[in-house]
Amino acid sequence: MKIGKVSTWRHPMVAIGIALMVVLMAELLVYTWCRVQYVRIGYEITEATKEHQRLAELYRRLKVEEASLRSPERIMRIAQQRGLVMPDSKQVRVIP
Image (tube, rainbow, N blue to C red):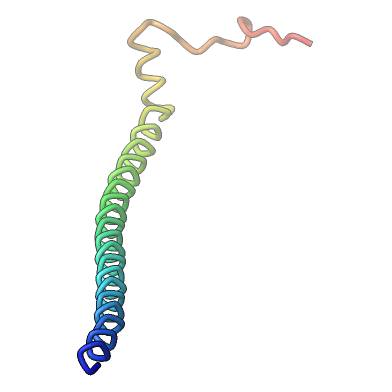
């Protein structure tokens, strides 16, 4: 009779132990997955920040280039090189 009681006592304990191990393993897997996602997103944020800085610098350089290209002195110089001159008042016609 003692053998029967001991074996019935151990079976529920083994089942509880296995269930606890499964829960612990699942918790560790979820924690590991969360950590991996945290690191991956950190890398993505770093890359996005670098890309943002690169694009901001490109934008700044393009604005400077645009300003130099729109310079009236530059436009006048190019026009003179191509033989263009400012019209005098007799050549200008105002259209109503």
